[in-house]
Amino acid sequence: MTVLFFGQLKDIAGRAQDTLELGETATAGDVFDHYAQRFPKLGGLAGSIVIARNQMFTGRSAAVGDGDEIALLPPVSGGSGPAYTHVVRDEEGGHFFALTRDPIDARALAVLMLRGEDGAVVDFEGVVRNNTKGRATRYLDYECYEAMAIRVMAELGREIARGHAIGRIAMVHRLGRMEIGETSVAIVVTAPHRRPAFEAALEAINRLKRTVPIWKKEHFADGEVWVEGEWDESLQR
Image 1: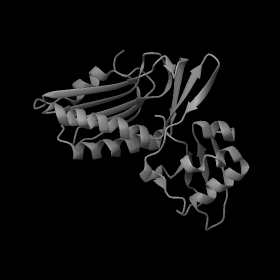
Image 2 (image 1 turned 120 degrees about the vertical axis):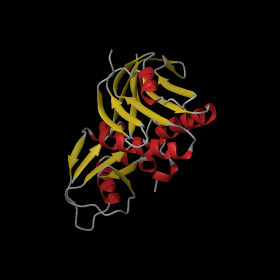
Image 3 (image 1 turned 180 degrees about the vertical axis):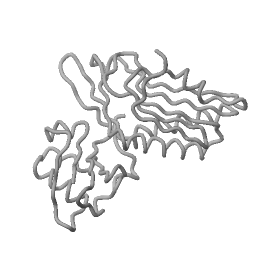
Image 4 (image 1 turned 180 degrees about the horizontal axis):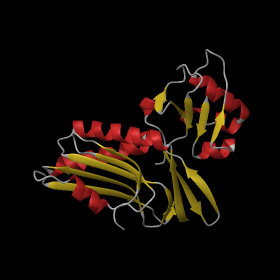
C-alpha cells in the first residue's frame, strides 16, 4: 500500500510518501503504529492524527490491504479568473468548490453564485496577517491532500446548503505561498435573505477549518512552524 504524509508529519518522516507491506489482517491502526515506532515524535501526536483510506476518513480498526492509499493527517490549521487545480461544480444546486494556486477573486465568485431571487450576498475572506501573538510573520505556505480535500469540501458545502435557507454556496481555498494581506480562503453565500446567508458562511468557515485536510506553515524571520489546529471530534475515532 501507499502511505502519504502531510504537514508536520512529512517533516517528521522525512518524506511525503512511502510504500508499506503488512499482513492480510492489517488495520489502519497498524499502519499508524508502524510509523509511530519508526518515528517516536509522530507517535507522540497520536491523539491528534486522523487516518484516511482511499481519500475517505476511516477508523483505526478498519481493514486495509494491497493497493490502498493510506494518508496520515495532522490537525488541520486551518487576473482573469484563477486557474483552479481541482473543481467541483454542483450541477443541480449550482454550488462551487475549488482549490487554486492563484489569487482568489471573491467578487467573481459572487457573480457566479447570484440568482435573480437572491437579496443577500455574504463574502467571507480569510487573509494572511502580519503576526501571530506578536511574532512577525513573513509569509504562509498552505498544502493539502488535494484529491480528498476537494471531496470533503464539496460534501461539507452541500450539507450546509441543505441546512440553511440559502441559494448557493462557493468555497475556494488557495494553496502554496501567500504574502501578507492575500486571501487564503473565500466563502461566498447567496440567499433570498441575509440571516441564513451569514449563518451558513460562519458555519462553513468554522467546519472547513476542522474537517478539510489543509495545513498551514507560518514563516517568521527567525524560523518556521506548522500551525496546529484540531480535527472535528466526529473524525477522531
